[in-house]
Image (tube, rainbow, N blue to C red; front, side, top):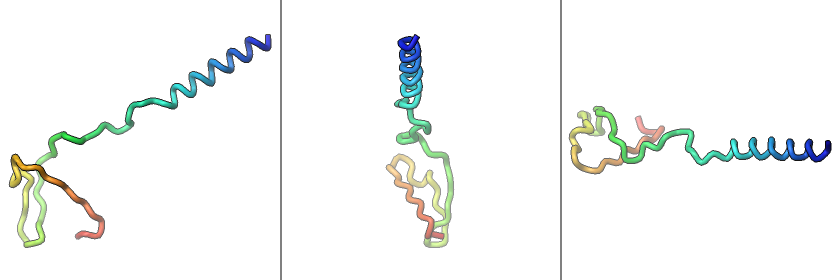
Length: 67
C-alpha cells in the first residue's frame, strides 16, 4: 500500500512539474513582422509616416518622457 502511495505521489509531482516548465512563450514574438501604417507628428512640427521610409530599416523608440 505504501509503495502505491509513493508511486502515485511521484507521478502527480512529475506531471505538475512538466506542465510548469513549458518552453513556449506566452506572447508570440513580433520580431521581423510588418508594422501597421501610422503617422506621427515630428519635432519640426510636421508629420512623418511609416510609408516615408518604405524599403528602409526603421527603429521605433518609445520613451515616456517624450511628448
